[in-house]
Length: 157
Image 1 (tube, rainbow, N blue to C red):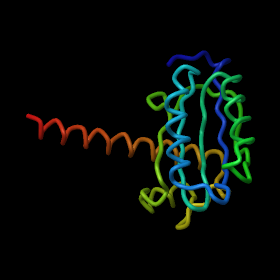
Image 2: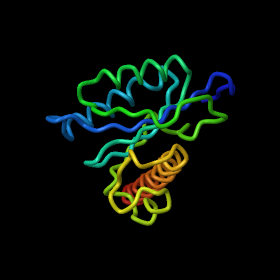
Image 3: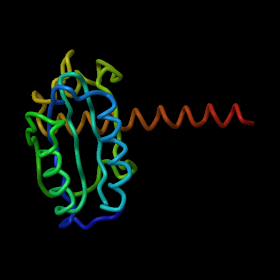
C-alpha cells in the first residue's frame, strides 16, 4: 500500500478486555480486522496478554479515526488509553492487515528490550516502546510463518 505522508496516520492505544470477554472474542476481532482493513487501506498489529492489549493502526486519518471510535465504544474493551496519534512518514505493518501475537509467545529478551518487563503491561509502554515491540513481534511472526510455509512445501514435495 502506498501513501503520501500527509494522508498516513498512525494510532497506538492500550486497552483491557472487559469481564466476560475471552479468546473467541479476540478471534472475532481479528477476523473482522483482517476482513475489513484491506478495503479501508488500514494495516496494523496487535499484542495481547491477560493484562491488556497494545494495538497500532495505520492508514488514512478518517479510516483510523472511525476504527478507533468503534474500539472505544466496543463493550469488549475497557480502559482504552491513547498512547500515540499523528501523521506517520511510512507504514511499519504494510504486509499485515492485522498482525497478532500473544505476549506469552514473545521472547522475554524482546519484551525487556522494549521496556515491557517480565510481565507485559501495555499501559507502561511509551509510544516508541510500543511501536518497537509491535514491529519486532510482527517481524518474528512473519519469520515463523515463513518457516512453517517452507516446512509444508518440503513435505508436499
